[in-house]
Length: 209
Image 1 (cartoon, one colour):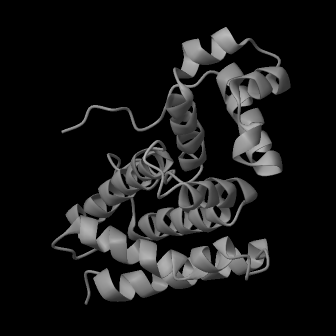
Image 2: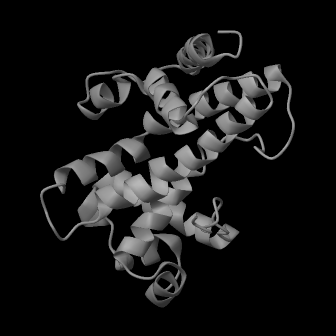
């Protein structure tokens, strides 16, 4: 079992640098994401970038992890919670996921990974999977396991339950957004979509079913 920490221990300075890197990626695409450009925009040295994040893949992994941290459920899977508390935590996860994947940064990262998918020298797709979706999945699956332990949910395979939840939340929206065919949803629309997805999930996996 991996001992990789779920929440990266970035300093405030490192988070500020990563946010600058995200801005560069959105504004200029892959070509803008150079160590020199990031160092200049963030007001730090290239040596500091290498010290903090290692090579370019390390920097990309840190960027993706920074994005993924916005989706991690706020509830502690180790703590007891009420059934309403579990529902609220799942709705928070769904809302944060929708807000993140519909944002310019997530779309830019995914478009870059898709564009490089046939190039053997890139590892962005694998980075997105490991530091993005897989990291989010571990935390949310742990929350679902807790819900099962407390008797609020019934799922023989929490990982399969998570995949179902993810599908109910995202649907085909991400593909449509990547293709530029969907307008930016309002906060109210995202909230309603999150609530609907969780309601459907509980209809499938609620202990009373």
